Image (cartoon, rainbow over all chains, first blue to last red; front, side, top):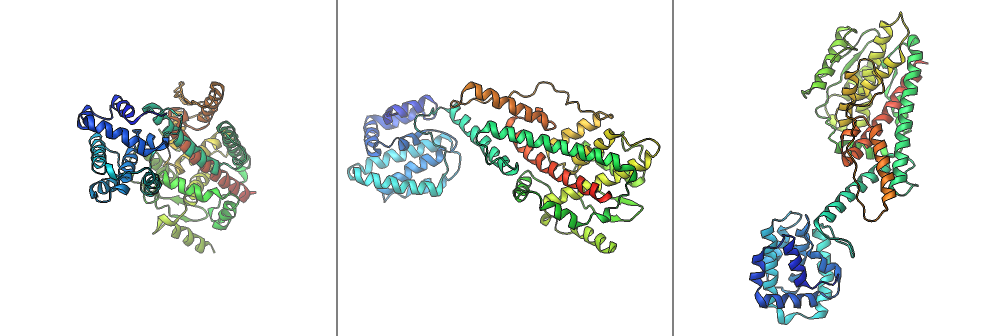
Length: 297
Length: 162
């Protein structure tokens, strides 16, 4: 991947990331400058690949401009731009602007650039980069076009979710690879569903003899059961929160517990059809008419 | 003693709902839904024996209603309400969303396996076939948790009455 910077810029242009104006601005002197830039950047391909355009390209661009900052200490503008570009998705114009400024600073400080200082600067700039910016890097030897980058981002999202699932499903840590984990997850879900079926069967068998007393199901019982769950429960609550578990909207489920009559009142603000259904459900429970219970629509 | 428990339970839901762990909220909702339902079932069908399927129906209904924040509960409700006789039929859409995993690193064979498994997972989750892969993976996590809590609640109900 030892493209010269010029070729890379041309490639970027083809990808419609750099407008043709840029080249005009560069002019012939600019192109020479770009070649010099390449030599300054050295053989570190990773750095050169920071020209890749992606959603978080602002990080890359800012990095390159902050790179300049180490050498050009009198140029405040670049620093401001670098700070402003934190985690924003840039428009094309901004990117172009940064590139322009980069080239300009190159012009100004051409004489002061030396190879050694560049290497040390690259280290410090990478520090700055780590502090401020997040970007997706095209690794060496990987395709860098838009589609592959998007695909890679998608894959990373998926793997993040798989990791979350790994925490939830017990016994997933030992298995490696997505297929194995998926297997485990499938087995676990199936076993849970079977358990539920079995328990409901048991309930149906025991049902005629049962007397339901909610007051007997004390909190202690629940908490004892909760401790059986793996540690992931706490993480799950985070996950559940992340899925917008609307606690503030949820209901005041205050139910007065009596032996004979159990009434439940539900207040809900959401107005979707199934919410209305559930309200009908509760209304029916309150009015003690069971016939509607099974046939609501 | 009963009074205390009543007060305790009332207190839990009153002022600061954010401090209640969602798992507890779910479980309470679930039991408060299921238990009266079972009781009514019991009372009503004292002539005939309680049908297993109806109990399962109630169980599923309680699950869906206790977890209305999640997409899969909507699908579950749809399924339950569309069929008065609860069966294990899947939803109407027969074409699942095709899972496409293009990966340059793995071979095509492994990809096929993974796709198959993802499809299986989709079938397990109610409404999974109508979601895309990312969404489904997120929903599966919630579903698993709710299933776990449901089993806990059911166990405690069963234990309680034996």
